Length: 624
Image (cartoon, rainbow, N blue to C red):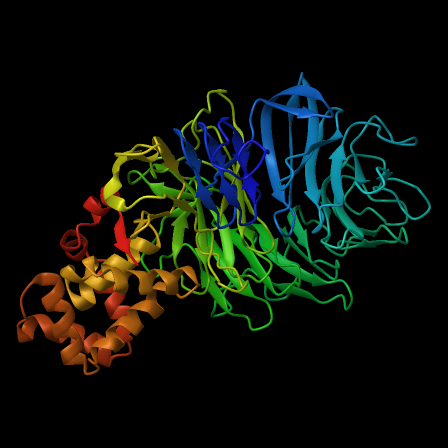
C-alpha cells in the first residue's frame, strides 16, 4: 500500500506528493494535498483523496533524455534495442550518452538503472530470463586479453559484477576477425554469436570476412559447439538466429539450400537440434511448400514455437508466420481473426514471441496506396483468439508509430521504441524513448483473475461529480466537498459510493456493450447488473467469443433460424425477410458457431450506433 507523503494514513495529510506504483497491483492512497499517483503496471486501485489529484493507471515511459545512473546524470540519444527479462522485471537497452555508446539495465520494480558498460561501438544486447546475465557484442576491450581492434562478445554477471569475454574457445583462443550478434540463453549458461572468420579448430571453406560461423558457447565449461561447422553449409550466407532456453535448439535463417526439400535460392528459416544434429526446414506452409524469403526468426524457450517473416521483396509488405515445430501446424499471423488481410509487416522490426507461443508482437505496415505503405504501429497477436490489437497508442487512443517491439517471456509486458511525443504526457525531449505497456490480451492466473484493470475510487456518489472527457483521459470534478478536480488517465474503471463506471470502451467495456446490444437489445446496455457480470467474466480472462456464446445461451435460442431472427431484429430493428435471413442461417448450418455469429453481429457498425458506442466514450458504462 502506497500512502500520501509517507507519514500516516489519515485525512490530515495536507502535503502534495508523487506516488509511483510498481509493475504489480498496487493500492495507492493520496489523502490530502494535490497528489500525483501513478499506478505502474498491474491492476491498481488509486484513491486521490482531498485536493486536485492526478491519477494515472500506469503506462510507463521507461527512458528519455536523462536518467541517473549511480548518481551521475546521462544525456541519452540514439536509444534502441530494448529487451525484457522473462517476467518483465528488467529492461535492457543501448543508447548514446555524451557521444559514447552505452548499455543499461533498469529494474522496473525499484526504478534503479545500472550502467552495463560505457565504451564504444556496441552491436547487440541480450538478457537472461532472471535479468542476472547480460550479453553484449562490443568493440571495446572490457577485460584483459580483449582484442580492442575488433568486436568481441562479453557477458556481465550483475550478481558478482564480473565480466567475461565469451568469444573464445575453451583454451582462450579467438578468431581473426569480428564477431557479433550476441545472444544469451534464458538460463544464462550459454551464449551464441556469429563470426566473420572461423574459430580456431574449425576449417574455413569460404575465406575470411564472411558470416559463415554460427556458434554456441557453454559458459560453464568453455566448450563451443558450431551450428555451422567445417563447411557443411558452405556457400551459405547466414542472418539472424535465436536459441532455446538450454541452447539445445537453434533457429536461424540462411540463404543456402541446407536440406533436401529446400529447392529455392532465397533465405529460409531452419531449426537445428544441437543434441541430435537434425536440421529441420521451418519456413514451410501448412502444405509443406516452401515459403520463399524467410528471416527475422524468433523461437520460444522450449524450442517448440517459431515466428518469422516471409517475402521476396522487402519494399513490399511481408507476411508473418507462426509454426508449431512439434505438430507442424502453421498459421499466417498477418490475417485478422476473420481471415481478412491485416496488411504487411516491416522487415526491420519483430517478430517477438512469448514463452508459450501464444503472443507475437510486431511492427505493422498497411497499404496507403497501390504502391506505398505506411507504419501501422506496434501490434500484438493472440494465437488463442486470432485477434490483433494496437499496442503503440497515443494518449487519446490513436495510433502512435513504434519500432523494435519485444515481449516479456510470460507475455504480460510489451516494450518498443518510439519517437512519438504523445504516448505519455510531458514528453518534450524531442528524442526516441522506450515504452513498456501491458499486453491487452494478457490475463493473470492468480486468484481473482484480471488483467491490468486500474480503478480510481471516489468517496461520493456519481451525481456528486462532473465527468468530462479529455484528449488524455478524463477529469472528475467534485460538485461538493473537498475532493477537488482529479485528472484521470490510463484508468479503466471509476468506483463511486453508489455505482461504478467502466471507461475502457475500446476494451472489455465496449465488448460487453456490443454483445448486450446484439443479444438483448440496445436498452440492455443500461442494465448495470448485466454490464457488471460481463465485465467480471472478461476481466477474469473469458474471451469475447465465449462471452457472446454465454449471452446467446441465456436467451434459450438454439435453432439457427431463431438465432438469426433475434440478432437481426436487435441490430437492424425489424425481423429479417427469408432472403435476408437465409445466408446467415446457411453460415450456421455450414459450421459457424452461434458465438461467432454473435461476435459478427456485435461488431457491425449499425450495432455500435445502436448502443451509442461513441457516446459511451464520453460517459462510460455504469455497472454494479
